Image 1: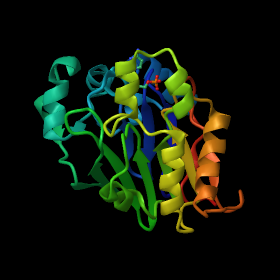
Image 2: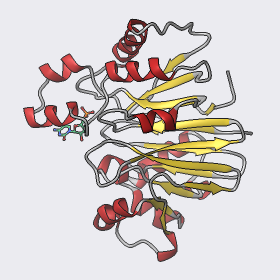
Image 3: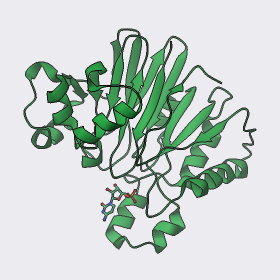
Image 4: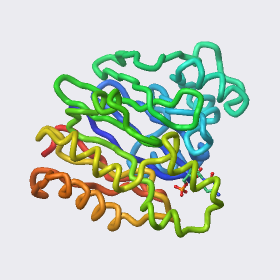
Length: 268
Ligand SMILES: Nc1ccn([C@@H]2O[C@H](COP(=O)(O)O)[C@@H](O)[C@H]2O)c(=O)n1
């Protein structure tokens, strides 16, 4: 079967992704109400009963809003590093001791045949992380909420067959937009969010021929549009000498209000 995934919802109104293989199904973040996550799972013919656990990237509410409710409803273990556990302790409510699992940043954990590696990212949270998933030779990496992409992150996500990468904003739209200056400054900072241009620059460094597609994620509804994000990413790659054919590499959409189709990492 290999790795399949669906991005259930992406953006500052709520983030959740399902990654599964033949024996494990994991939810990455639970940033919407449990009721909404249940609806999104149902749209992809899944139920919370089929989940084996929830991996948390960081404590911001668009990543943990439904975390406690999902864990209680389906008796799911939650995996997060110690600092993130501390940061979510009030928001998450009562969680059974057995469901409080520590997955330290940089650690690897085997969920039967699905191997998960966490890696540290730069964002204004206690100890934010991204995750890479491995099954045999297949690799999927998920990296959103990044102010910038460090060499360590590049190393962690390089050679992924499929990548879910943040392309939060168009810098000019953000500069001209309605957010107060302190929020704009935060978003543009090294602990904020990745712009379309920066996502393209990173991809130009990472494309080795192995990465077949990248899902552009966590798009701002105020300061971005999917077509603009794709065009800017593509231009940024070409400016750096990275040309590709759509048959070799594709940029794919994520949505804030509906799940992406199931994607099999092994597929071309
Ligand atoms: N009034 C606001 C609006 C947004 N934020 C934060 O900014 C980041 C980007 O948000 P987008 O919706 O434009 O993607 C995100 O971290 C929001 O939480 C804010 O703090 N205040």
